[in-house]
Length: 325
Image (tube, rainbow, N blue to C red; front, side, top):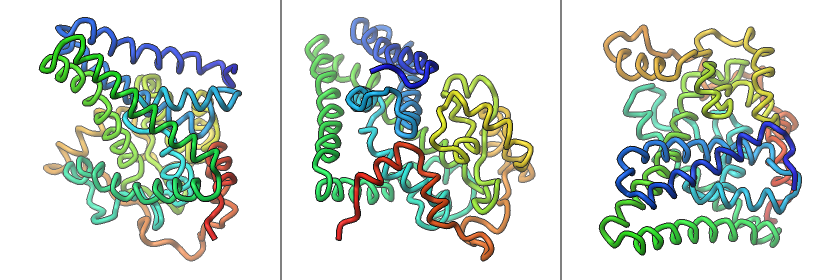
C-alpha cells in the first residue's frame, strides 16, 4: 500500500488534521466560531489533494487509492472521481477553448468580480454533462469502474449523513444542526466554490494557443498551503507530474511565459483585479492573443497531443471507459 512519493506524507498529515479540526468542533461547539474557517481551509486543501490524486495516484495499490478517494470525498464536498471526466479528460484536453466544460468566457470574456463570483454556478452546470456521460459509459462498458463510482457516492453521502447524525445526537437539533452546517457543509461549499474560482483566475484572459495558456501564482506561502496548486502553467505542461516536482518544472518554463501571468501574491492580484481595476483599469488583466474563442489556423491541436495532456489517472480512465457504440 506504500506511498509512491515520500512528499505525500504531508498529504496524509493534512488529511488527518482536517477531520481532527471537525472532531474538535463536535466535542466543543463553543469553539466553532474560532475553527470553522480553519475547516474551510482544510476542505479546500482536500479538493487540491483530490485533484493531485486523480492526476498522480497517491498510493501504489489501487485499493488504497480507492479508499483514499472516498475519504477525500467526505470532506471535500463531492465524490473525487468527478475530477476525471471534467478535468483530466476535458479541461486538460481543451484548455479553456471550445469543448472545455469549464471555459471562462461562456457568456462573456469580461473579467469582473461578478463574473468570477458566479463562475461556480455556471461551471458546475456545464460540468454535470461530462460527469453523467462518464457514469453512463462506465455502467455500459466497465462494471468494475461503475461499482467504484457508486461506492464513492455511497461513502460521500453516508459519511456526511453519519456526521450529521453524530452532531444531532451529541448536541440536539438546534446546536447539532448548526454545528454540522458550520463545520462540514459550509467548508465543503467553500472548497468547491474556491476550487472553481482558482480555475477561473488561472485561465481568464490567457492565450491557450501558446505557452501563455495559464496564469500562475508563484508565491511560496500559497504553494505550500495548496500543494503547489499555484504553479498552474507547470501543471498543464506536465499533468501527470507529482505536485512536489512542479517547482522544478516551473523554473524551466517561467522564462518563456508572459510576465503578467506570473503573479507573486494571490491576495494582491485579487485586490487589484476585483476592487481597484474598476476604478483604475490599467491594474486589471487584458486578453492575451486573439482569445480562446479564435484558434489560429497554424496551431490546431492534434489528438495525439491532447492524449498526452491527460495525465496518468486520466489515461487509465480513458482506456477503461470505451465510447458507447
